[in-house]
Image (cartoon, rainbow, N blue to C red; front, side, top):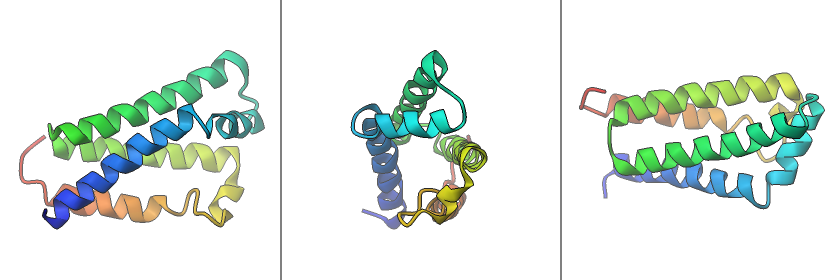
Length: 122
C-alpha cells in the first residue's frame, strides 16, 4: 500500500467514524453544542443528521475512488466551514485538550498534500 493510499484510507476512516459517532454516542453532544448557539428542535435535528449524512457521503465518495481531486477539494471546503461554524458557536473548542478544532489544521495539510498527488483531473 502506498503512502497516498494509506492517507486516503485514513480519511475514509475519519469521515465514516465521525458519521457513526454523530448518529450514536455523540449525538447528545452535538445537540448540546447546537443549543449553545440557540439552535434547537427541528433545526438541530437537521444539523445533526444532515452533518452525519454529509460525513457518511464524504467517506463513501472517498472510498469509491471517483473524482478524487474534486473530493479532496470538497473535503477542504467542508472542514473549513465546520471549523468556522464551531468557532462562531464556541471558540473555546480551539483550546479543547482533544483538539476538537486544532486537529483540522493537520487534516487540511494532509488533504492539500494528497490533492497535489492526484494526477487525474476532477
